[in-house]
Amino acid sequence: MNGSRQRIKDLPLYQRPREKAIRYGINALTNVELLAILINSGTRGESALVIAENLLIKYQGLTKLANLTEISEFGLKGIKSIKAVTLLAAFKLSERIQKENYSTLEYLQNSSELANKYLHDFSAAKNEMFLVVSLNKHLKIIREQVLYVGTKHGFNLDVKEIVSVLEKQAAKYYVMVHNHPSGTAYPSHEDLVATRKIRDLTSIRGIFLYDHLIIANYSYFSMKDNELI
Image (cartoon, rainbow, N blue to C red; front, side, top):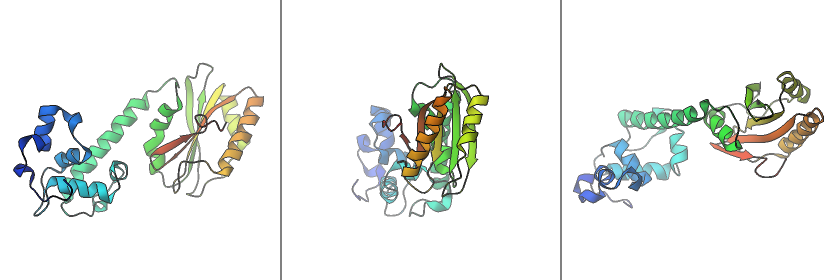
């Protein structure tokens, strides 16, 4: 594409997104071509391919683009209400498919499954949230419980309350999950200190920390995978 103003119907058949998908399969299409199919038609002077390319440039890729939730957020020539709604619907379906895949999660096999289950809700949250997932000795999920909802700057953590919750649920292992609404998924010094304090206190009682996941901007950080606990 590279800024070309050429209309899609003027392209050779094998270069047109729909025809290319039919001929070679949907996996053969680039991100620009997939978006162009959703956009459907261009505007005067710009094809759907150019509009799609401009969207990816403006939002620096698919991730930020797919996080849009309002029609007014697009603000780009060639994207009016109907096209914006079509794109928002596609993004929302993708999000719900991912949630559905993890909604029936019963046993924890790896941290990424749990992280992906909460990725959208915790990334979209305006305030910091703290969740504890209680597990039995077979890593079966006993309960998932949000213990704290604070401000965008954090919350006051009561270590004894966390221990009490785990003991009441007869947990053998547990995972902590919290988000950084205005930052990155990398743990702060305070995160590490609090995590190790909780880990040490629960391990005395025979309840062991499996992982602590931090979610931010639709990405996550596993303390276990990064050997920080």
